[in-house]
Length: 223
Image (tube, rainbow, N blue to C red; front, top):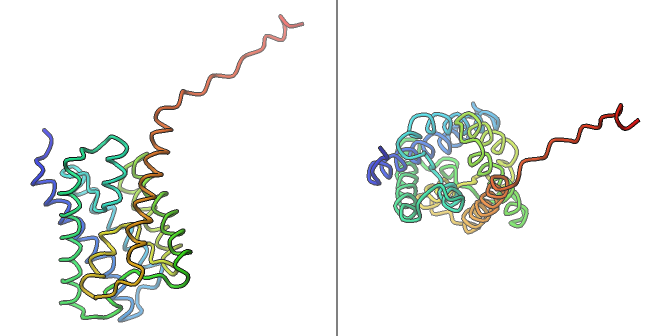
């Protein structure tokens, strides 16, 4: 039996809360102690996604990302009527997660807020590319370890440049609580465009005809 919308929305809120507490939380801990390192923070992000998908996937699908919800909807795998409640739950969970970080660790490391390290255009392009790769992996595989692995790799590569958010909710929570909104628009626009592209490629791959088997030439008959 399909889960009710209320149960699914709660699961989305809880999952996004966990993502923000543990993901940006790792960045805050690293800023405070220097103990984790950049790759350690990236690994925490990836493992968090694996854990959330494995735990809450059966309840809500564990989108924990408005861009993922958009991609799944455009791919015809999620109802439009559930999009707004899902996104509202994701944003609420992200905001609560950032508030918990503030209460526990203070305003260290700007609560892991995502801001471009350099040119905004470069960060936009990077967020677009990383979001496309993540969402295509989610659409084509959906396995927790695959999606979490892509998140970890993307964070390792793009973290120093753009923050490697790929998730408007993950960026929204820390921005709301820290009050830092620098170039915040790109953390919505780039993942949304990445979702459109990923859904389009996914549909194209789903609808394409299978490759024909190569013709076998009977060389004896051909002489």
